[in-house]
Length: 304
Image (cartoon, helix red, strand yellow):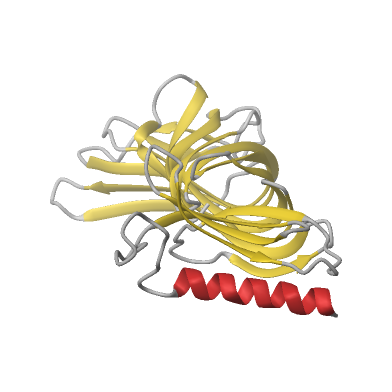
């Protein structure tokens, strides 16, 4: 009990020292006040002598700008432990629940953010048509996930959603469904001007991701497979006729591959904004006589 009391007393004194403004330091002029406005790192170390708290400054040099030691009595029984952490500001906290173990590992529940990118139809058969600059993806990487965190690493399994559009805006051809529930190139009505034709695929996704906080930086690397259940697909084409009237066709009579696997990787800054790449080695449509391709997406991630 005495050890616990001493530890609480030491931590309380240390926090009072850090939070008091202005803070006093031992320097050449005893009447000078040291004011710490932007500390980047606080290190607490406990050993047999006592608890030592160091405040280090922001800048190219890692300098100690303040330090305080709370000594223990010779009769105290102390277990030694050291932990270091950065004082960083996050625009939100994505962890909903943490369950800590004695070995500093964690089980918890959290969310991952939004992904917005451009889709490239790799290895189109026949070649050309769908345009990378016009095709886009919007996805919620994980609206809920369960994770296990240890050291600088985290492994998570989540549930998310994804919408992919593959688009062409030239007026010479459009997407149509064929008798095999595949897709092929067709023509807009004679005398009309095509506006766009697109293929849309909606997926329920299960991302299994490994996350690593890169040492001495605010960068995070994340990678892993994503299992997709493609529950919906449709084709839509829009044109203007010779009189300027809008016309369109729409069909869901196509057969996407119902289960696909993507490979995902991202780099993010402060787990707030970053870039990601997503690629599937599996083709989108699940029939032979069809336009087909493998999707590659590059974009921005927010909150990942």
